[in-house]
Length: 201
Image 1 (tube, rainbow, N blue to C red):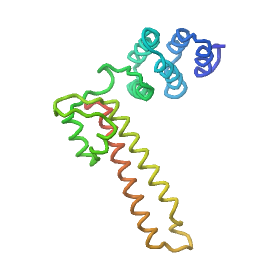
Image 2 (image 1 turned 45 degrees about the vertical axis):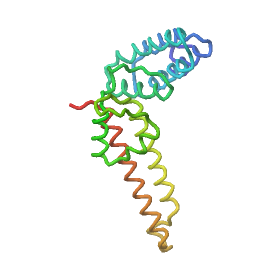
Image 3 (image 1 turned 90 degrees about the vertical axis):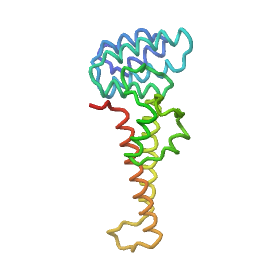
Image 4 (image 1 turned 180 degrees about the horizontal axis):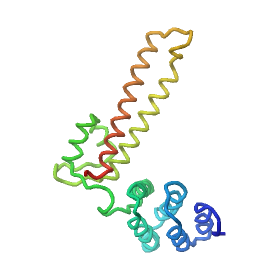
């Protein structure tokens, strides 16, 4: 099954049989890349997120070792964030930067994002010197960026083509203004998430 097969199919093959040890061994043997290989690791972390106790540890730890051995910083970071979406924490301070609440407050001010919105979805410390959960804040920032981007697109679709024969009414201009505001909010949240996910030089 594994010879010449796509890695996602091969991992699925082992997974259907509950043979996750072989699936991990296969992933480790293949060359890491940012599409199918990353998706295959995602299948492993998804399964780890459903397990508990020693069963989870036996799958999660080999995945963690696999990720830490990666030379590609982007791939290492994105797999860690993918795993957190599946309630699996592969990072113990080796991958994502460590930031304090004072740091995220400062970066949020620079990016002009709404910390009140962030605090509704992420538990933030009260002490300025306390460390934040970097992965949680980055994922929330990306989610907000996607939400505002989609809202802006939906609003733009409600307005006639500005180069078309139909004139823009006053309410259309209000819609365009709101769409531009949401687009800018998307850009700001994306900037904050990027700043927090990449170590400072």
